[in-house]
Image (cartoon, rainbow, N blue to C red):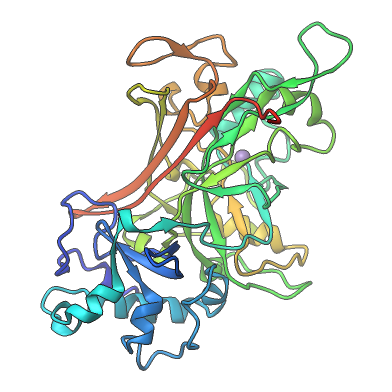
Length: 427
Ligand code: MN
């Protein structure tokens, strides 16, 4: 049904850049501080941030069942909990308000001054209060590469991997929005050849190119979500850099999995792009190589064609593009992930976040982490302005971008950008 909001011919009366990630067909959701220091829920068209709290107060959402303060919140959780029908009504209305030819807001300067901000007047915030964060491991290429690096070629994939979307429970307290810098973590690690561990700065700090989806309230304790209904409970997607310290990870991960090598920081892009906006970019998933249990069988287009890229920018220098990948490479799709997550009756709430796992493509220039790109440091990656990288160095900024494009419409995510600061020192 995702209606007229996706119509490639629809244009806005706002003046927006040609190649923007945020045309009128996108209408993502985010949270920002206005120039008057008021926190509000908003959307973005071109380089304008739209204050949905102000639009609602001025009566532009009349006829849609919304509480008075639904957009005057510092997180999207309550709005997300209103469900897919409400998200659609609100996006449709925003699309109409800003559609070329609609004079209601366009010709009301007083209202425009209250509703429309330029991006440099606002400050983006973390858009959701993330209750629980789960990280999947759903790219076959990535899981195979990691298996080859840490184990051996013949047992690269664990026997369970082909039968279920493997995951672990992450930590939400260290999830940060784009733009917040991170200190190099310290931790316990076992140097090569040593028999005793030491405590020290991680020397192998890495990015993980991921996407993550945000859920709404989906199920009660004990109640699984069927794979064919899962998409109804997915609000939208963001770019996700799941920072990792490979030396800490290597020493700690057996037998209970990732811990301090992972939970020092994960960064997300600030605008949540809805599944409805991504509808035109649906594509087939890779064919299952083993027969799946019925609760994981899903047919039709369940994946999305989203081009992804990562750049490294050393301080004071230009960016170097280090990899290009695509979300469509995911072996396990989001519907299967959510069905698997809840098959035991685990409840999923509004504002929960599910990471895809590192998204590596089939070729060495499409790998989603430095560990794979530099093959554990054995093949340094050249930088455009000289030097190279095996892993991320102090004061490097890692920038991830993503977008879909078809029929002249580009639906993008903006970016998620994080600077790695030197190790924390008490002043
Ligand atoms: Mn991860």
